[in-house]
Image (cartoon, rainbow, N blue to C red; front, top):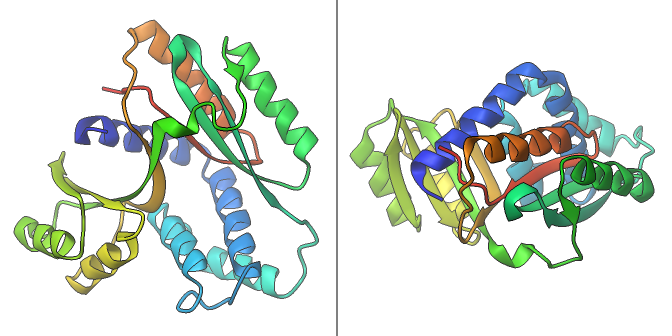
Length: 240
């Protein structure tokens, strides 16, 4: 994904966050609880929890909210048993879409996701029908206030695959294996704030649609992201 397209996606996500911050924090809290239940409540010894906390901090989730989610999970006060479920399908124009969910009711989630696709003129596919079009990658975005050469050297020396300067930000792409080492190297180089810091799925190739088609697809993405059980939505639409 090009830096320009990547930053367009980040801007859109930020706009959604600003409009529905409470719902986003609820989803992040659920993810934190699952990670904390699956291992140690200490992010220093629980890599999955550390990763989710980094993601939450990048979305400006308050520290108190993060700690409450950890305490709720480790204190046994949350009775829900969540499971990871992925749905794959096609949106308008043949755009590939993957929907990752955390749910305590598969039937409810499947019904909501299927209905969203159908109403938007898309359709759900079988497992693996579109996932082969995506690769797991680390995505790190930091403000452009830091020295570019210093940040670039820190990231590349730690194993980053790409470093771009886009609209007063630095966009760093890593492999799944080097994500943690690159993040830690940037922190050691003085980075205090991440605009994005997570493992994500990046499309191998993107689909370009006209303005009307793009709006239809983004409307579906927003509808899916509004479902409580949906954690992340990945797609191969090229955004400008």
